[in-house]
Image (cartoon, rainbow, N blue to C red):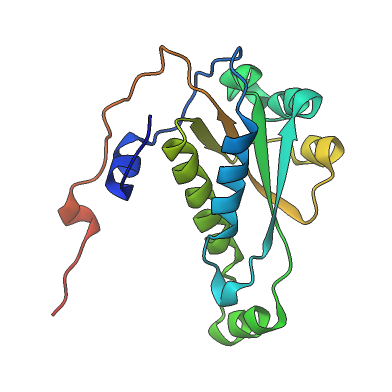
Length: 179
């Protein structure tokens, strides 16, 4: 599936919870996703994060680390995981964060996750952004730099994973116009 504009990507992207374990993700698609991730905007272009790609045995271990208390059972079929960790700011971004009393790193990581999932969707892949994981286990598995903030599953959706109807708030509940 190839999308030509962002609206198509936004309408078709959803959290994938059913992966085709028999399909490997092509190296070119992984490279495209990571290339787009590098282009994600961040405060003062500081890119205060690190992406760790887990595949093979590491991915199998990450799958277990995201399944605590019966959560994320689909993870056993996921071929790849991206671990997003928070890194220190550049001096300029750190100063701006102090002056404005706002640590923008979590915002920057959210934008990074959006770029990753959008590009994955454009490449015909499924993703799920996971905030439920065993931090100590993730650290043992892939030794990420910085504090682990999110884990993103990545792979081909199974044939049974159909596009679901989006349940979103009405525009009036989300949007205000001021003139």
